[in-house]
Image (cartoon, rainbow, N blue to C red; front, side, top):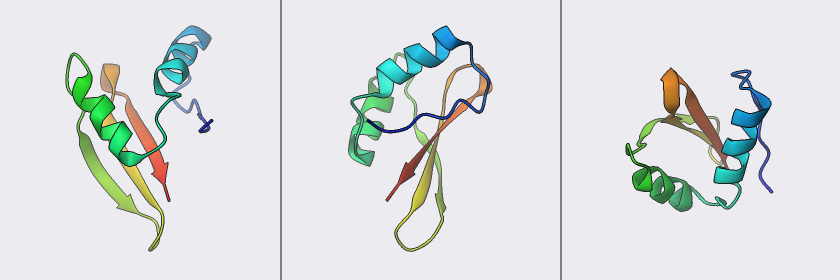
Length: 72
């Protein structure tokens, strides 16, 4: 299972809900498709290149928060 870091200090219930929702996402394609299926579409806002193999993909979430997916 992909790891989840709660840097936004979500409540345990909020974090658990998010973990359950994201648990089946293993590829960037799945993340993008998931974002488009949301009641309010979640688009990729930015891709931060770490090196030639690793990128961070940033998506807007609820309440001004963002999700960051580390891809390799």
